[in-house]
Length: 298
Image 1 (cartoon, one colour):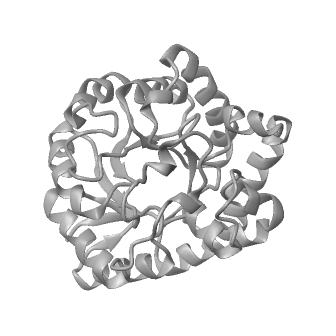
Image 2: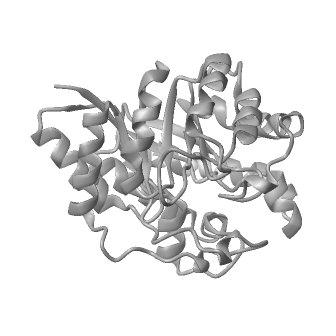
């Protein structure tokens, strides 16, 4: 049948839920500081579930996110710890890969805060240079505007690591970025910067098929990893939110998520996984379905 790359599921959201630290600004960085062994254990759970790539717990590790909290000097130590936890897990599963996660510089789903690409690119580059030597690929996540994509792609170029970029689309349909710009408008950026894969992430699973149909003609391997939120709330889109402002869906168990994700293969997807509120059980069921359908997980 088809070779499918199976990503892991939620890292940050799963960690804060397990550690019960939802209502604070550090998000999963707090878990990395207080309970690093929990991070390694979660990576190992995803590998055991069938994922072939572990995504580092570095999504929120940027100078621009830590500086307002007076923690920017701790960034090198935190990056090292995030990488080390993924490496500890991979040692138990030889041959698996590690993706270095690069999240938005300031806030998720906030295209109004995206810096000019000339400002953003060196900031992304600092992070990419720290991650690249100890990862197999760089994963730019939750890109909500063309401006953000430009800065991130400029900043991650030329580092001798494959670059994958994942865009987030609106909660109501899959044809527009959260900025309101058409998803189809990413095509020139992809042609110019030549990432190795393009994905849709942190969007409702119901809108993924429409987005995949837009990605399909762009000539790159593509896929998706959806979230399990009811919606991105207005409260979360204000300054200094916490994930306590987001609500987890009650209707997205492992079976229902896998059922929807398997349909993405019909749209040409060859990379699948999960984002916020999609855990190891979801990935295990998706792996089971893929194997049962005759696909090879790579």
